[in-house]
Image (cartoon, rainbow, N blue to C red; front, side, top):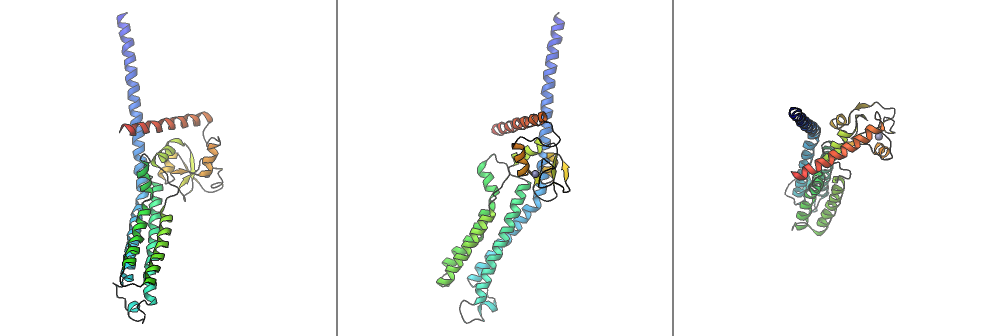
Length: 284
Ligand SMILES: [Zn+2]
């Protein structure tokens, strides 16, 4: 009798141990898959992030040139010496042209930065950091025009008309730079990982940043499509779901290749994983 009891207890202990081991290995797999996804998305984003810094640097260089021309620190013969006026047309054209270049480079840099963040989103666990990261271009925009405005306004040699125009033009450029540098449609790393884990079969075009849950979607219907799992879509740079497909799911449609029960189970497990990750992060 005693031996049998022992065996039963041993069996139970063995089973418990097995369950723990299974859970551990499942967690490990999940983590490995997350690391793999993040490695892929970082790689996708890298060229855009490098380009962002290159163009932002060019924008700042153009600002420096605008400042030097405005302050007449650069003696370009056709600008400063040929005209009789102390503010020849060439002088106006040159510093304004540098401000325009400043703005163009800033906009290109900021859109590369945003593209990089859409391919490899930042974590939204810290809301402030998430916002700062997505909207870094706003601060670059400030750097691209505010020093010019200050220096132009403080310039003792410039007359009032030149100062006013300099401030107005640079302020307009600053406003354009800020509004185009804001990311109005950011995505978080959590949302992306959730997408990778949730969808079994999705569709995407070579162009664009979204995947589709339905091949009947108006945006992809009749077009040549790539097909794969949510994870594959994310790795291919499609980190978010198309708005139309998202709406269909919210309205209760079940994505292709899934039955209703599978879909509900998946949604539930994704929600659980998300809350688990959140509490895990809190424990960190
Ligand atoms: Zn769609």
